[in-house]
Length: 321
Image 1: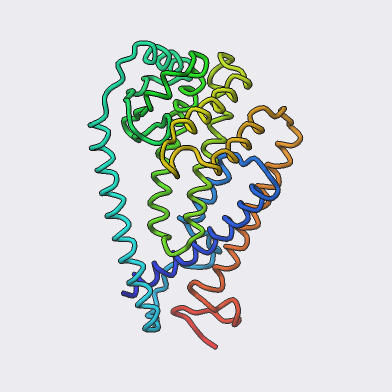
Image 2: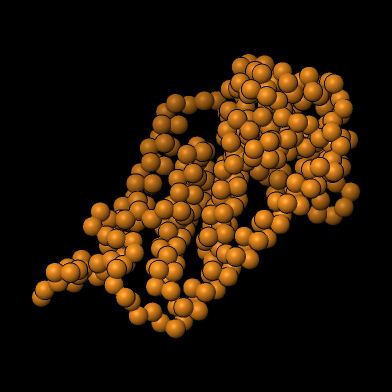
């Protein structure tokens, strides 16, 4: 229980640092309206995983510690919660794979031709498999090892070739940039830090940042085959068709997705500014460095040889007054 308690203490530490970084990220994204490059939310995910300690501090104390009874109860609750969420995530993944096997493979030569051409232009070695599905999203990509694209037939068949190229470039960019893998890793980060509500908020924000990253890189990977106006038009067209297809209350795009799509369109069509991008990069880097500095200083007060740096003493084999 000693080692488990120390591990739980470390999880509390990284969860607190990651939560602070999440609040900072939310402020810059939703208040200052910064467009976040993907490396910034990735750093936030790393802060939820790995403790950044002072060089003189050890994560696990070699000394036996007297934990309060309530601490043991919370520690066991954390372990049980991790187990339950891990089982739930595993069952959900198994059911998703079974559902994919039940989907009908796409038999449209037109869609296969457009997808293959887009995959070749984007630099993918192999085009993903195409399936007709019944998901709320008009089109999405799934699968880390063997990616596949699931499409809503009534919506996709109404798109023009240019709109289909834009949509396929977007989904293929998810594969090329390994967004699916990163989001799966974030699922396990949420499982380990499930007690902290900020990790779930950060996970949702990370998914939105993946969409922004996809918009930027999809246009780059298209190598001029589609313009910003055509790409933005395809996004709006999908939004329109999805809203029409939503027959039940609460289904379809929804008001929140309209607001998010509006922000995406503004970012897609905005004129590039190197000065603005550099300023944003500098501010994000400073924010990350400040968070790391706080983590290092905070570790000196909560890990072994705690509280040596506050009391002016050193704990260890050669301890003396």
